[in-house]
Amino acid sequence: MKNTQPRKVPNKKHDKKSRKTIEDLFVQGTNDNSIVSKRSVERLYTKVSALEQQSKEYFKYFVRKTPRRSPAINRGYWLRMHTIRDTIEKIIQTTISELNSNSTHTISIVNLGCGFDPLPFQLIEELKLPIGVKLFCVDIDYPHLIHNKVEIIKLTPDLLNIIVPNNQPVTSMSNGIELRTNNYAAVGCDLNDTATFRTQMTQLGLRNTNTTNIFISEVALAYMSPQFSNSLIQQCTIFSQSHFILLEQILPSGSLHPFGRQMLKHFQKMEAPLKCVEHYPLMSDQMKRFEALGWREVEAKDLLNCWDDLDTSLRAKVQNVEAFDEWEEFILFGQHYMCLHASNLQSSSSSSHIYSSANTKIKSLSHNISPITFEFKNFDSEDGQYEPLSRKFASGSKIHDMNDSRFLITCGSAQSRLNSTVALSRKLFELKINQNETSPVSRQCHSCCSISSSLFLFGGRTSPGRALADAWKLTMNTDNSFDWIQLEDMPVARSKHSSVAISDTEILVVGGLSTNDTANLFSTYSTIANTWTPLHINLIKNRGINRDH
Image (cartoon, rainbow, N blue to C red; front, side, top):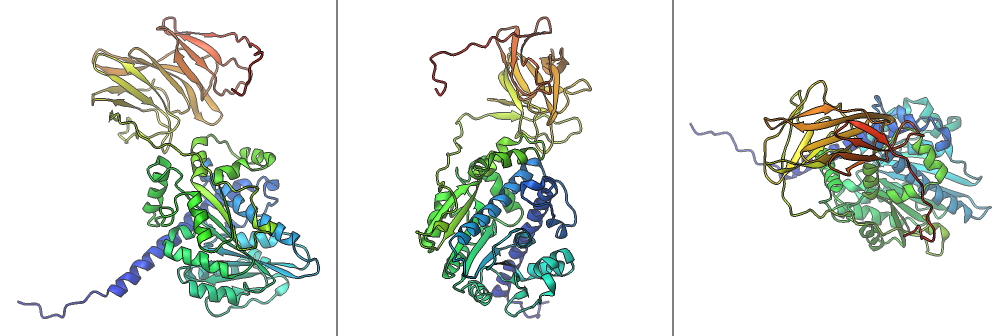
């Protein structure tokens, strides 16, 4: 029987609106991840009160649970937060230095895509401004998110007292301005709607002649399509005496570089893809972007340069907060994020330049791949879990036998430390590593070298400060399987050392880190006698040699 029900016609306009709503929700979800990471930083770094001249905690009011992030994430987020804060303070200092002592002035700080970041509360409570200079902070984000933030503020006396001192009035204005006090405003706005944004900022007084404006986007515009983010950046230039601070991702070696590829994949997985970085992959592209959109002065640095420019004593305090040795990851992170400062002030103004020098040069991170093709054999752990080929702080060496020349990669870490082995070969082969109770424990930062068909493994660490002294030999059986055999321990536990075969029966192990600062880190191992011999070191003084070459 023919269906007589009327056919439903798809509402393309409704579908488009629903799709945008879903995309907006995913972007808002990035706030949850960011705010938890910043709270993790706050819990650790406020213990060193002199680090940021503060001991009070602010993020705790917006985060229910606070899992501790990895040291690399903690330090990366600390650097992000410090860079933004330091740039703001430098702008304020130079602005104040140019003011007429008898004039009154307002410095407005607008946090675009603020999420639950409590930056305004930190600045209002901690910055000491001279008489006649007023600080006014504006939080602006999606209306629903701002509504939730305002509800938290109203229920938190410690926050409310910062923005409403001495029972000053709290108002709720029209046009999306949910909360307004003498020094703070919370504004709900879809930043794609630049007309509403301009109206709201004008209503808050940002176009007054005695106002300096500082617009901040900490990885907020990155999720917007360039046509909308560019419109917003250009709108900010209509407010005279303005600065723009942009912290965003870059791709210094393109999207094929492993770190850049993983970064893009991470945000894609969160359903909040980075839409600007593909149009402006380099720091120089971002600078040209702002110049084209009407900003007179533009300068930028990647976060690795920001780390290098830290005061020596401050950097030392940061390094003492927690054990840290993910330097490779931290360096790559720093090279893939940049902080840009733009100003529409006249170039003669000293406050146009905040950084000591613009840093537009960045070393290319090579991503050329050798044309040699390898096949690899993966070895499952005893519990049957997949052991990844991609791992950090592993060690490897090539062994030879009648079947093939094989490169074995041992231990290291992925999501956690590993004790497994993977192998690379120009042709696929079967290889079995027998794991038992006498096999090496999971470790990283160890050293491996080979002699003929045997692989030797020395030391490493289970965690920062916990070095190992054990030594192992991977030897082949008659059935072509391999077993680990434990050897005589090294004279001293060590990690991050090197080893090399200096003969068919002797291996030199040198350098690294040890819990014993006075230990001799030069020794040889005899594969025949299974013994260690510490080496006596003679220091030879160089004469007439240029040490810089």
